[in-house]
Length: 98
Image (cartoon, rainbow, N blue to C red; front, side):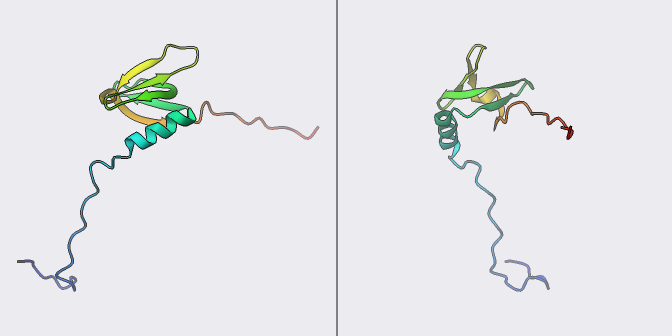
């Protein structure tokens, strides 16, 4: 039996369900990143950050392709997050009017 409180005008109103643990959009997102060869930044659980683009992925790992460095196969359980990489920040120099 539900308790009625003075502020609760609708006793049949149910509590919101929590968001799902899994959205099943991971494969779609990784596929889009790979097709566009979008630069990504991968932060590993040990704190190391590696950059490249995702060439291949499956259920348990990704292949990160890098320029001028060896390609990496990284197990997903070692990844803290994957973020799209904007590259190194460009500094804007002030230009005087001379």
